[in-house]
Image (cartoon, rainbow, N blue to C red; front, side, top):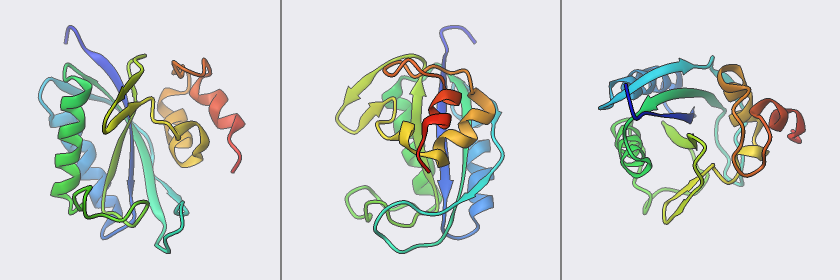
Amino acid sequence: MTGTVNVCIAMGSNMGDRLKHLQMASEQLGDLPDTTLTACSQWLETDPVGPIEQGAFLNGAAVIQTKLSAGDLLAKLNAIEHEHGRQDQATRVKWGPRPLDLDIIFYGDQIIDQPGLIVPHPLMHERSFVLQPLSEIASDWVHPKLGLTVKQLLANVKS
């Protein structure tokens, strides 16, 4: 693939068959147009974050190579979430339970700040449930704003 961008995606599920949602979503990432799945972490069970009482998550991370723009990729990720039963943004509870959550963590070394899309993900450096699986497959990836690798961010996280 030429003209591709390497992208890190955080993955999580805490409803239904969590493992099945994540495994199917991983396959769907590789099936996106002009996209190749290059790495996928192991799955990690984690406690939920936020004020809503809910079950434990399975979390992981994937790295893809894609020719899709960040906006097009986000639309495709939202469609995959919807296929797995995720509610539309207007009706879902913030930080509530979800069958599938896919977040763009890094889009190459780009900094993106658009309505509905902020990359790097603004809270990723504070979340071990993102950094731990990501460090398994992209430990040397450098955060374009903070100048630290994923491995260094994980070492600094407080949890």
